[in-house]
Image (cartoon, rainbow, N blue to C red; front, side, top):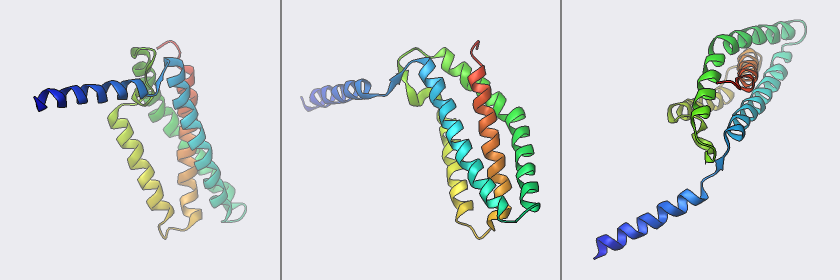
Length: 155
């Protein structure tokens, strides 16, 4: 008898989780990812520029330009493909599906790894002007990826 009660309770819990999930249309899912990449890209880019400029001028400006160049390359050759893959994934999903599912589990694991790496670098003894171009590059790449994702409407 208790097995049946446990099954019923588990079923109720599953129903509750389904009702409370953050469902969103495909348009909202795409917009959320574009917004997330844009916000993080701007924040990382701004921090990177500030750190680069700690080296003074003109060296700091050169570091910023190097980071922008590297970020543009990564945005074009890496994140453009990722943006197309994410756009296809979202296009194949039903309207109202869970917002978090716009990215796959492996992609969310990569996000967590990148966040942990950024935190570790920020708390390391590496001087900020050395980290600056990396942060500018990652920020620029995320902004380029967001732009590509926003453009892939026909996928």
